[in-house]
Length: 501
Length: 132
Image (cartoon, rainbow over all chains, first blue to last red; front, top):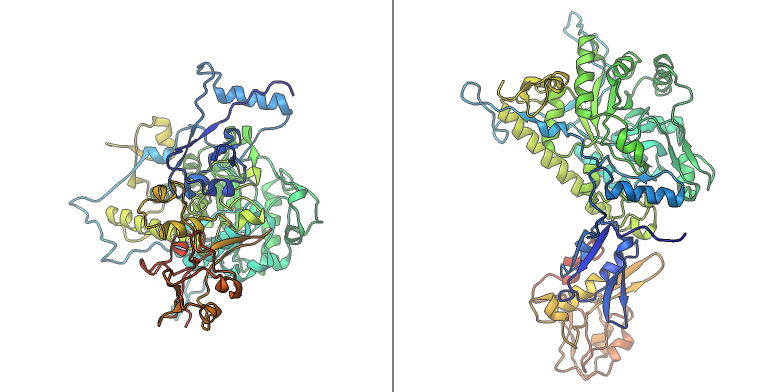
């Protein structure tokens, strides 16, 4: 269609002195950027196809490669940036909705980075986690308002079903379909060894993964794909997905081409048919309707499993969470606007939702004000990047966190945000067999375990520094936080004082 | 996954150079001791199995091909006359004609003790382990 308005986004810089022409870059690039020119006897690159996934850079044995931004600049304009202009070109070319993947990359404020953690000095001793016991175990589920005992001192109160986490970290919902089988296996095996949980996402559970059932959270989303009583019973908990941080208010669409034999069986839909998850659950238009689904699922599993309701962090999140806490749900999962996705319309991802930090603080406060905080546990998600973020989340009132993007990064993801292309060179967000096998689950699950262990150590160090020896004592302990560079309104919502106060 | 890096690391390990770029610069490129077989859905490295009763040793007309007490099958390049009998008899196809007279085969990187192919395989597709 006439003029090509596009310049490459990235430039492949190859040092010809270092290149030994081993062609590993060519063999490993699913985007077909690199090729060997026989006439010139050298490797050449088509920059326009590069997505900056860094696969070639990581595998080049002589470090001859480097990817940089393509140095072509449109006339400088603070308002009409090159990105805005290019996106208009794209839409003028295709007439389509722009698609993106992974979390919101727009430079909105990151509140984690504006919160500081306390430490003990002089008057209250800090604790050395290497020498003294330190507890990071968490139980998720509804807590009773009071405990009753009989004459023999035995507990009379019936405790609701719980999830028992050895670390306050779980792996977020990522479906088999959005991520590869090997990525799924890595998560499942890591969850099993760590004593925590991974989440199936909405695509059902492949029969090969039933063996990890006791460390699995099974998801029920608006499409109800792959949901049957065996599936519900297979997991340790059931999650109803009402929303996702990356795309609040909209559903999903798995194109028919991706519904092969295996996915068809898992999702319980015909081969080659599109799998469309509607935006709403068509049977949920009120908290009462949600309550019906919560109890249908509990009834189906004989009240043995906690039910999680996952929502995206949106403007009215505190009131919504209050309703959910009264719906019979045991756990509320809140996904912030930086939460990842395998594919979402760019405009939704970049403009819809609110930061998880503010959502968490307001939900925790609202539930406490209403005296129903103990009815539910709170799990937060949406860009937990390190153990510092986790400590801050727990001090703001979370019981545990979900990590998705961090887990994928541990598996090699470079956050190139091209998942929707299905050609993930790292073998994560793809179903192409030749790419999937690049992720060896034997390596992957160990890397996930390493990451979570490292974070657990760091959490213990930070707890010890505050003079706290159990993560339960940090929960909602906002006095352990101070804000920096925040307005009074932001501090009020977060419920923390400013540094120096 | 068919990246062929094992071939390059193998050739480098046997090049006698300390720098990979130097090893592959110049006209005579170092030769690997293993080859990658590529298929539609599967790729694998063909390297010496260090057989218990190696046909190559049995058939070697000059005694260049030997097996040491550790079970490693190796070639004494000074005695190899390049008759290629070992290449013909090896059931795995893991003996490679050399650019010079002597054939090339895997020596398990005896000098460093760590086979370069396994050490540098990015996906643990090649592992080095003792099997009895």
